[in-house]
Amino acid sequence: MSDIDTLLRRYYSHQSLSEEKVADIKAATAKSVITRVKPDSNLHKANKSSKSNTSNAWRYGAVALLFITLGMSSMAVYKESVRVSKQEVLNELVLSHKKPFHADYDMANTDFSELNATLSEVKFAINIPDKIRNGFTLLAAHYCSIAEQFTVHLQLVRNDDNKMSSLFITSASPLLRDIESDTPWTMREGDQYWSDQSTFYALLNSD
Amino acid sequence: MREATDDLLQQGFRYAYSLCCQKHDAEDLVHDAWVKISKANKDINKGLLFVSIRNLFIDKCRHNNLIHIDVDLQVNDLPEYELEFESPISDSVLERALGLLRTSEREMLFLHTIEGYTAAEIAELTKSSRGTVLSSLFRSKKKLKKLLGMHFYEATDTFVRGEL
Figure (tube, rainbow over the protein chains, first blue to last red):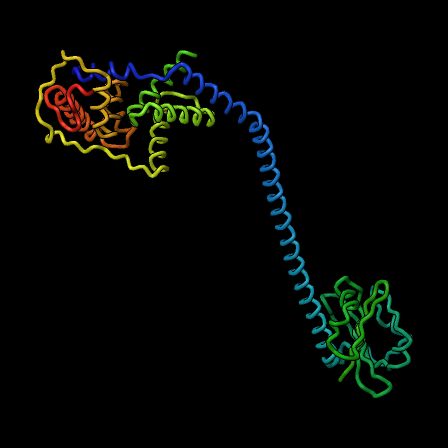
Protein backbone atom coordinates (compact mmCIF):
# COMPACT_ATOMS: atom_id res chain seq x y z
CA MET A 1 0.00 0.00 0.00
CA SER A 2 1.42 3.34 -1.04
CA ASP A 3 1.39 6.41 1.12
CA ILE A 4 -1.04 7.96 -1.29
CA ASP A 5 -3.47 5.28 -0.22
CA THR A 6 -2.94 6.21 3.41
CA LEU A 7 -3.51 9.84 2.63
CA LEU A 8 -6.68 9.06 0.76
CA ARG A 9 -7.98 6.82 3.52
CA ARG A 10 -7.37 9.47 6.09
CA TYR A 11 -8.94 12.12 3.91
CA TYR A 12 -12.11 10.19 3.16
CA SER A 13 -12.46 9.05 6.74
CA HIS A 14 -12.86 12.68 7.63
CA GLN A 15 -15.66 13.10 5.15
CA SER A 16 -18.99 12.11 6.54
CA LEU A 17 -22.63 13.02 6.61
CA SER A 18 -23.70 14.86 9.71
CA GLU A 19 -26.04 13.17 12.15
CA GLU A 20 -28.73 15.65 11.18
CA LYS A 21 -28.34 14.88 7.51
CA VAL A 22 -28.51 11.14 8.16
CA ALA A 23 -31.69 11.69 10.17
CA ASP A 24 -33.10 13.84 7.37
CA ILE A 25 -32.48 11.17 4.79
CA LYS A 26 -34.04 8.50 6.96
CA ALA A 27 -37.05 10.70 7.66
CA ALA A 28 -37.46 11.52 3.98
CA THR A 29 -37.26 7.84 3.15
CA ALA A 30 -39.80 6.88 5.82
CA LYS A 31 -42.13 9.69 4.71
CA SER A 32 -41.88 8.76 1.07
CA VAL A 33 -42.46 5.11 1.84
CA ILE A 34 -45.45 5.86 4.08
CA THR A 35 -47.04 8.30 1.67
CA ARG A 36 -46.36 5.95 -1.16
CA VAL A 37 -47.14 2.59 0.30
CA LYS A 38 -50.58 3.32 1.76
CA PRO A 39 -52.25 4.77 -1.26
CA ASP A 40 -50.16 2.73 -3.61
CA SER A 41 -51.07 -0.57 -2.02
CA ASN A 42 -54.73 0.15 -2.57
CA LEU A 43 -54.03 1.79 -5.86
CA HIS A 44 -51.99 -1.19 -6.89
CA LYS A 45 -54.83 -3.50 -6.01
CA ALA A 46 -57.30 -1.21 -7.71
CA ASN A 47 -55.11 -0.93 -10.75
CA LYS A 48 -54.59 -4.65 -10.76
CA SER A 49 -58.30 -5.22 -10.45
CA SER A 50 -59.07 -2.57 -13.00
CA LYS A 51 -56.48 -3.97 -15.35
CA SER A 52 -57.85 -7.43 -14.73
CA ASN A 53 -61.40 -6.24 -15.40
CA THR A 54 -60.34 -4.38 -18.49
CA SER A 55 -58.42 -7.37 -19.67
CA ASN A 56 -61.37 -9.66 -18.97
CA ALA A 57 -63.74 -7.28 -20.71
CA TRP A 58 -61.51 -7.29 -23.76
CA ARG A 59 -61.26 -11.05 -23.59
CA TYR A 60 -65.02 -11.52 -23.30
CA GLY A 61 -65.58 -8.95 -26.01
CA ALA A 62 -63.17 -10.73 -28.30
CA VAL A 63 -64.82 -14.09 -27.62
CA ALA A 64 -68.29 -12.60 -28.16
CA LEU A 65 -67.13 -10.99 -31.37
CA LEU A 66 -65.65 -14.28 -32.48
CA PHE A 67 -68.91 -16.10 -31.79
CA ILE A 68 -70.93 -13.42 -33.55
CA THR A 69 -68.61 -13.56 -36.54
CA LEU A 70 -68.75 -17.34 -36.60
CA GLY A 71 -72.52 -17.24 -36.20
CA MET A 72 -72.92 -14.73 -38.99
CA SER A 73 -70.56 -16.70 -41.19
CA SER A 74 -72.42 -19.91 -40.46
CA MET A 75 -75.71 -18.19 -41.12
CA ALA A 76 -74.40 -16.79 -44.38
CA VAL A 77 -73.08 -20.21 -45.38
CA TYR A 78 -76.38 -21.83 -44.37
CA LYS A 79 -78.40 -19.23 -46.24
CA GLU A 80 -76.18 -19.63 -49.27
CA SER A 81 -76.55 -23.41 -49.10
CA VAL A 82 -80.33 -23.07 -48.71
CA ARG A 83 -80.42 -20.60 -51.57
CA VAL A 84 -78.47 -23.01 -53.74
CA SER A 85 -80.78 -25.85 -52.68
CA LYS A 86 -83.88 -23.83 -53.45
CA GLN A 87 -82.40 -22.88 -56.77
CA GLU A 88 -81.65 -26.50 -57.48
CA VAL A 89 -85.18 -27.56 -56.56
CA LEU A 90 -86.70 -24.90 -58.74
CA ASN A 91 -84.45 -25.88 -61.63
CA GLU A 92 -85.42 -29.49 -61.06
CA LEU A 93 -89.09 -28.58 -61.14
CA VAL A 94 -88.73 -26.60 -64.35
CA LEU A 95 -86.74 -29.40 -66.01
CA SER A 96 -89.28 -31.98 -64.96
CA HIS A 97 -92.06 -29.74 -66.19
CA LYS A 98 -90.43 -29.45 -69.61
CA LYS A 99 -89.52 -33.11 -69.82
CA PRO A 100 -91.95 -35.06 -72.01
CA PHE A 101 -93.81 -37.95 -70.41
CA HIS A 102 -92.79 -41.45 -71.32
CA ALA A 103 -95.72 -43.61 -72.23
CA ASP A 104 -94.42 -46.59 -70.27
CA TYR A 105 -94.71 -44.83 -66.98
CA ASP A 106 -97.63 -42.56 -67.62
CA MET A 107 -100.93 -43.12 -65.98
CA ALA A 108 -103.03 -41.63 -68.71
CA ASN A 109 -106.74 -41.09 -68.96
CA THR A 110 -106.90 -40.43 -65.25
CA ASP A 111 -109.50 -38.27 -63.57
CA PHE A 112 -108.85 -36.11 -60.53
CA SER A 113 -111.40 -38.13 -58.58
CA GLU A 114 -109.55 -41.36 -59.26
CA LEU A 115 -106.18 -39.90 -58.51
CA ASN A 116 -105.75 -41.21 -55.00
CA ALA A 117 -106.74 -44.69 -56.07
CA THR A 118 -104.47 -44.61 -59.09
CA LEU A 119 -101.45 -43.30 -57.18
CA SER A 120 -101.38 -46.17 -54.72
CA GLU A 121 -97.73 -45.77 -53.85
CA VAL A 122 -98.14 -42.26 -52.55
CA LYS A 123 -97.70 -41.99 -48.79
CA PHE A 124 -98.92 -38.44 -48.44
CA ALA A 125 -102.44 -37.08 -48.79
CA ILE A 126 -103.29 -35.40 -52.05
CA ASN A 127 -105.84 -32.65 -51.87
CA ILE A 128 -106.22 -31.00 -55.23
CA PRO A 129 -107.73 -27.54 -54.82
CA ASP A 130 -110.93 -26.74 -56.59
CA LYS A 131 -109.34 -24.06 -58.71
CA ILE A 132 -107.08 -26.78 -60.18
CA ARG A 133 -109.88 -29.26 -60.55
CA ASN A 134 -112.04 -26.67 -62.31
CA GLY A 135 -109.41 -24.83 -64.28
CA PHE A 136 -107.29 -27.70 -65.55
CA THR A 137 -107.73 -31.01 -67.27
CA LEU A 138 -105.62 -33.89 -66.08
CA LEU A 139 -103.77 -35.52 -68.92
CA ALA A 140 -101.42 -37.89 -67.22
CA ALA A 141 -99.53 -38.63 -64.03
CA HIS A 142 -96.22 -40.23 -63.21
CA TYR A 143 -93.75 -40.59 -60.40
CA CYS A 144 -90.56 -38.66 -60.30
CA SER A 145 -88.07 -37.33 -57.82
CA ILE A 146 -87.84 -33.72 -56.70
CA ALA A 147 -85.37 -32.70 -54.03
CA GLU A 148 -84.56 -36.36 -53.61
CA GLN A 149 -88.15 -37.01 -52.56
CA PHE A 150 -90.74 -39.25 -54.05
CA THR A 151 -93.00 -36.93 -56.08
CA VAL A 152 -96.12 -37.16 -58.14
CA HIS A 153 -96.03 -35.22 -61.37
CA LEU A 154 -99.42 -34.41 -62.90
CA GLN A 155 -99.51 -33.17 -66.44
CA LEU A 156 -102.34 -30.68 -66.87
CA VAL A 157 -103.83 -28.57 -69.59
CA ARG A 158 -105.19 -25.20 -68.65
CA ASN A 159 -108.75 -24.96 -69.81
CA ASP A 160 -108.50 -21.25 -70.65
CA ASP A 161 -105.72 -21.38 -73.20
CA ASN A 162 -104.89 -25.08 -73.53
CA LYS A 163 -101.38 -24.48 -72.32
CA MET A 164 -99.51 -27.29 -70.66
CA SER A 165 -98.98 -27.11 -66.91
CA SER A 166 -97.41 -29.35 -64.31
CA LEU A 167 -98.51 -29.98 -60.78
CA PHE A 168 -95.85 -31.53 -58.57
CA ILE A 169 -97.00 -33.09 -55.34
CA THR A 170 -94.68 -34.37 -52.67
CA SER A 171 -94.34 -34.44 -48.92
CA ALA A 172 -93.67 -31.06 -47.42
CA SER A 173 -90.09 -30.86 -46.24
CA PRO A 174 -88.72 -27.76 -44.52
CA LEU A 175 -86.82 -26.85 -47.66
CA LEU A 176 -89.93 -27.04 -49.80
CA ARG A 177 -91.99 -25.12 -47.27
CA ASP A 178 -89.25 -22.51 -47.42
CA ILE A 179 -89.69 -22.26 -51.18
CA GLU A 180 -93.36 -21.76 -50.69
CA SER A 181 -92.88 -18.96 -48.20
CA ASP A 182 -90.08 -17.31 -50.10
CA THR A 183 -91.94 -15.83 -53.02
CA PRO A 184 -88.96 -13.99 -54.53
CA TRP A 185 -87.58 -17.39 -55.34
CA THR A 186 -90.45 -17.98 -57.69
CA MET A 187 -88.50 -17.46 -60.82
CA ARG A 188 -91.26 -17.86 -63.31
CA GLU A 189 -94.35 -15.74 -63.46
CA GLY A 190 -97.54 -17.62 -62.86
CA ASP A 191 -95.91 -20.52 -61.07
CA GLN A 192 -97.46 -21.24 -57.71
CA TYR A 193 -96.17 -23.04 -54.65
CA TRP A 194 -98.18 -23.96 -51.62
CA SER A 195 -98.42 -26.62 -49.00
CA ASP A 196 -100.87 -28.00 -46.51
CA GLN A 197 -100.09 -29.96 -43.37
CA SER A 198 -98.03 -32.68 -44.99
CA THR A 199 -97.97 -32.05 -48.70
CA PHE A 200 -96.19 -29.62 -50.95
CA TYR A 201 -97.60 -28.52 -54.27
CA ALA A 202 -95.89 -26.76 -57.16
CA LEU A 203 -97.84 -25.59 -60.19
CA LEU A 204 -95.70 -24.69 -63.16
CA ASN A 205 -97.14 -23.17 -66.29
CA SER A 206 -95.78 -23.16 -69.79
CA ASP A 207 -94.82 -19.80 -71.27
CA MET B 1 -29.50 -2.61 11.58
CA ARG B 2 -29.50 1.09 12.32
CA GLU B 3 -25.69 1.17 12.37
CA ALA B 4 -25.55 -0.70 9.10
CA THR B 5 -27.87 1.85 7.54
CA ASP B 6 -25.78 4.71 8.85
CA ASP B 7 -22.58 3.09 7.58
CA LEU B 8 -24.15 2.59 4.18
CA LEU B 9 -25.24 6.22 4.07
CA GLN B 10 -21.72 7.33 4.98
CA GLN B 11 -20.20 5.09 2.32
CA GLY B 12 -22.64 6.47 -0.22
CA PHE B 13 -21.83 10.00 0.78
CA ARG B 14 -18.07 9.43 0.40
CA TYR B 15 -18.57 7.90 -3.00
CA ALA B 16 -20.76 10.83 -4.04
CA TYR B 17 -18.14 13.17 -2.67
CA SER B 18 -15.48 11.46 -4.74
CA LEU B 19 -17.57 12.18 -7.81
CA CYS B 20 -18.57 15.79 -7.32
CA CYS B 21 -16.03 17.13 -4.79
CA GLN B 22 -18.77 19.27 -3.26
CA LYS B 23 -20.19 18.45 0.14
CA HIS B 24 -23.69 19.79 -0.50
CA ASP B 25 -23.92 18.14 -3.90
CA ALA B 26 -22.75 14.87 -2.39
CA GLU B 27 -25.40 15.13 0.33
CA ASP B 28 -28.08 15.73 -2.27
CA LEU B 29 -26.88 12.81 -4.35
CA VAL B 30 -26.91 10.31 -1.52
CA HIS B 31 -30.26 11.63 -0.31
CA ASP B 32 -31.88 11.33 -3.73
CA ALA B 33 -30.36 7.94 -4.41
CA TRP B 34 -31.50 6.58 -1.05
CA VAL B 35 -35.06 7.81 -1.50
CA LYS B 36 -35.16 6.53 -5.05
CA ILE B 37 -34.10 3.05 -4.04
CA SER B 38 -36.51 3.04 -1.09
CA LYS B 39 -39.40 4.02 -3.36
CA ALA B 40 -38.52 1.19 -5.68
CA ASN B 41 -38.96 -1.21 -2.76
CA LYS B 42 -35.54 -2.60 -3.30
CA ASP B 43 -33.22 -3.83 -0.63
CA ILE B 44 -30.54 -1.23 -0.34
CA ASN B 45 -27.01 -2.50 -0.60
CA LYS B 46 -23.76 -0.80 -1.37
CA GLY B 47 -23.61 -1.84 -5.00
CA LEU B 48 -27.11 -0.60 -5.71
CA LEU B 49 -26.50 2.63 -3.83
CA PHE B 50 -23.29 3.34 -5.72
CA VAL B 51 -24.89 2.64 -9.08
CA SER B 52 -27.83 4.87 -8.20
CA ILE B 53 -25.56 7.68 -7.02
CA ARG B 54 -23.47 7.40 -10.14
CA ASN B 55 -26.52 7.50 -12.43
CA LEU B 56 -27.98 10.47 -10.56
CA PHE B 57 -24.68 12.29 -10.83
CA ILE B 58 -24.62 11.78 -14.59
CA ASP B 59 -28.30 12.74 -14.85
CA LYS B 60 -27.79 15.92 -12.87
CA CYS B 61 -24.89 16.94 -15.03
CA ARG B 62 -27.03 16.37 -18.12
CA HIS B 63 -30.13 18.00 -16.65
CA ASN B 64 -28.28 21.12 -15.62
CA ASN B 65 -26.48 21.11 -18.94
CA LEU B 66 -23.33 20.92 -16.97
CA ILE B 67 -20.30 19.79 -18.76
CA HIS B 68 -18.15 18.35 -16.09
CA ILE B 69 -14.92 19.94 -17.04
CA ASP B 70 -12.05 17.79 -16.02
CA VAL B 71 -8.75 19.46 -15.66
CA ASP B 72 -6.75 17.73 -18.28
CA LEU B 73 -3.49 17.68 -16.48
CA GLN B 74 -1.19 15.21 -18.11
CA VAL B 75 1.21 13.44 -15.82
CA ASN B 76 4.10 14.18 -18.11
CA ASP B 77 3.30 17.87 -18.11
CA LEU B 78 3.84 18.10 -14.39
CA PRO B 79 7.30 18.72 -12.99
CA GLU B 80 8.93 15.92 -11.09
CA TYR B 81 8.99 16.45 -7.36
CA GLU B 82 9.56 13.93 -4.71
CA LEU B 83 6.74 13.95 -2.25
CA GLU B 84 7.85 13.63 1.29
CA PHE B 85 5.08 11.87 3.09
CA GLU B 86 6.59 12.80 6.34
CA SER B 87 5.52 16.33 5.56
CA PRO B 88 2.08 17.17 6.87
CA ILE B 89 -0.55 17.19 4.15
CA SER B 90 -3.78 18.68 5.24
CA ASP B 91 -7.18 17.58 4.02
CA SER B 92 -7.64 20.86 2.23
CA VAL B 93 -4.42 20.33 0.29
CA LEU B 94 -5.45 16.82 -0.67
CA GLU B 95 -8.91 18.05 -1.56
CA ARG B 96 -7.42 20.64 -3.87
CA ALA B 97 -5.18 18.04 -5.47
CA LEU B 98 -8.08 15.61 -5.89
CA GLY B 99 -10.07 18.42 -7.49
CA LEU B 100 -7.46 18.61 -10.20
CA LEU B 101 -7.94 14.98 -11.14
CA ARG B 102 -10.46 13.84 -13.67
CA THR B 103 -13.77 12.72 -12.19
CA SER B 104 -13.18 9.21 -13.43
CA GLU B 105 -9.69 9.15 -11.92
CA ARG B 106 -11.00 10.35 -8.57
CA GLU B 107 -13.82 7.84 -8.68
CA MET B 108 -11.51 4.95 -9.50
CA LEU B 109 -9.04 5.98 -6.81
CA PHE B 110 -11.85 6.07 -4.27
CA LEU B 111 -13.33 2.74 -5.29
CA HIS B 112 -9.95 1.02 -5.31
CA THR B 113 -8.29 2.61 -2.31
CA ILE B 114 -11.19 3.24 0.04
CA GLU B 115 -13.73 0.60 -0.95
CA GLY B 116 -11.22 -2.05 -1.97
CA TYR B 117 -12.85 -2.73 -5.32
CA THR B 118 -10.82 -4.77 -7.78
CA ALA B 119 -10.06 -3.41 -11.22
CA ALA B 120 -12.65 -5.80 -12.67
CA GLU B 121 -15.33 -4.59 -10.26
CA ILE B 122 -14.54 -0.97 -11.03
CA ALA B 123 -14.65 -1.75 -14.73
CA GLU B 124 -18.09 -3.27 -14.30
CA LEU B 125 -19.44 -0.31 -12.37
CA THR B 126 -17.96 2.32 -14.65
CA LYS B 127 -18.63 0.35 -17.82
CA SER B 128 -15.03 0.50 -18.93
CA SER B 129 -12.40 -2.10 -19.55
CA ARG B 130 -10.20 -3.54 -16.85
CA GLY B 131 -7.13 -2.30 -18.69
CA THR B 132 -8.47 1.22 -18.74
CA VAL B 133 -9.12 1.03 -15.01
CA LEU B 134 -5.63 -0.24 -14.25
CA SER B 135 -3.92 2.39 -16.35
CA SER B 136 -6.18 5.09 -14.96
CA LEU B 137 -5.39 4.05 -11.40
CA PHE B 138 -1.68 4.09 -12.07
CA ARG B 139 -1.83 7.45 -13.84
CA SER B 140 -4.04 9.11 -11.24
CA LYS B 141 -1.85 8.06 -8.34
CA LYS B 142 1.21 9.33 -10.16
CA LYS B 143 -0.56 12.57 -10.96
CA LEU B 144 -1.71 12.98 -7.39
CA LYS B 145 1.81 12.46 -6.11
CA LYS B 146 3.14 15.08 -8.46
CA LEU B 147 0.42 17.54 -7.55
CA LEU B 148 1.09 17.11 -3.86
CA GLY B 149 4.83 17.39 -4.50
CA MET B 150 4.29 20.63 -6.36
CA HIS B 151 2.51 21.98 -3.37
CA PHE B 152 5.57 21.64 -1.30
CA TYR B 153 8.26 22.45 -3.78
CA GLU B 154 6.90 24.96 -6.19
CA ALA B 155 4.52 27.85 -6.17
CA THR B 156 2.35 27.92 -9.27
CA ASP B 157 -0.95 29.55 -10.27
CA THR B 158 -2.73 26.41 -9.29
CA PHE B 159 -0.79 25.46 -6.25
CA VAL B 160 0.60 28.15 -4.11
CA ARG B 161 2.64 26.80 -1.30
CA GLY B 162 1.31 27.91 2.03
CA GLU B 163 -1.97 29.19 0.64
CA LEU B 164 -3.60 25.81 0.78
